[in-house]
Image (cartoon, rainbow, N blue to C red; front, top):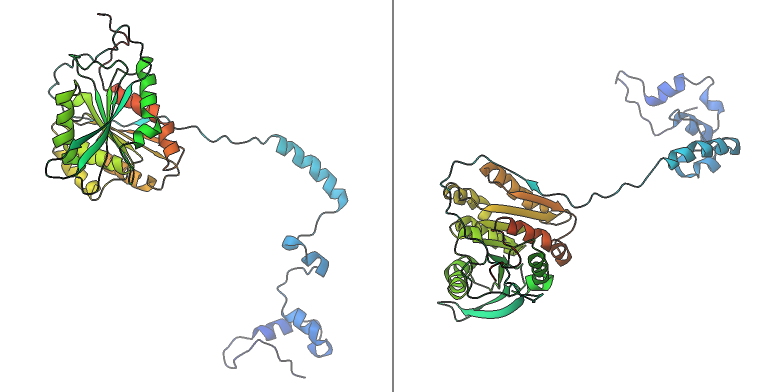
Length: 357
C-alpha cells in the first residue's frame, strides 16, 4: 500500500526524504493506521498536543488550577504595592554652552538703564499700532510698539529695545495677543527687568525683513524715541518663521544686535549652510548671546538639533532649552516670562523708582 503525502523525495538526491525519516521512527507499520492518524504523526512538530478546549484559549496556555491561583494572588500583591507612578519630568533648566573666545577689545561702559520715574502710578504700559512707509514700496510696514509704564520720551538714558518677529501667516499682533505686554509689565514693575521697549514688526509678502528692519524701522525708532544706541541695548528674537528671520538678521548685523532669541525656530533656507560664513565675519568679541528653545513634540525639533550641531561646530555659545510642548501658541505664551528674563540679562539694571525724583 502506497501512502501519498505532500512530501516528495527525488531519487538520487543522496538524502532520505522527510517522509522516509519520519517513517523510520514509527514503532509500527503505517498501513494499518487510519489516514487521519498518519497525517497527525507525519505532520507533528514534536510539541505536546492540547485539546480543542485548551487551544481555544488565548495564547494556548492552560489556566492554572484553583489551588494554584490563590497562592499566586498573594505573591503578586506585594509586588504591585511596591510599584508607583513615574512622574513626567518638568521643563528642563536652560543648558548653557560655552566656548573659548579670543581676547576682545572691551566695549565702552554702558549707561545705566532708565528707571521708572518716582511717583509713577501706571500699572500697565501702552501698545501703539503704527505704520511706516517703505522706500521703493507702495505698501507700508505695520508694527506694534510696546512702551513700558511711565515711559519717558525725554529720557537721557536709552531704553533697551527688543525686536520680536511673528510666525508664518501671522501678523504684527501675534506677540501682543500671546500676552507679551502683560508679562513685560509684571517683570518691570517687580524689578525683574529694567524698563524696555518692544517692537513687533509685521512681515508682508516680498518684504526682506533684514533690510526693512535695519534700514528703515530701526533708524526711524531711534530718531523718534530714546531707544537702543548700542548692540548690547538691542535684541532680536522671533518664533517659528520669525525665529528664522531673527537668526538671519542677528547673525549678519552684530553691529546692531547683541542678543538673538530663537523660539521654536524655522530656519530659513539656505541659512543653515550660510551660518558658518556669517560667523567667520563676526568681529572678535562681538558674538551675540543666543537662545534656542523648542518643545519636545514640536515637528521642528530635528531641525533645531541640526542648528545646535552647527553652533557647536562654530563654538558659538548659546542657551538650549527643551520644554514640554508643541508648535503652538499655548507653548509660547507659557514661556514668555522665561524669554524676557533671558533678554534682560544682557541689559544694564536699574531700580524701579528713580531716586533723583
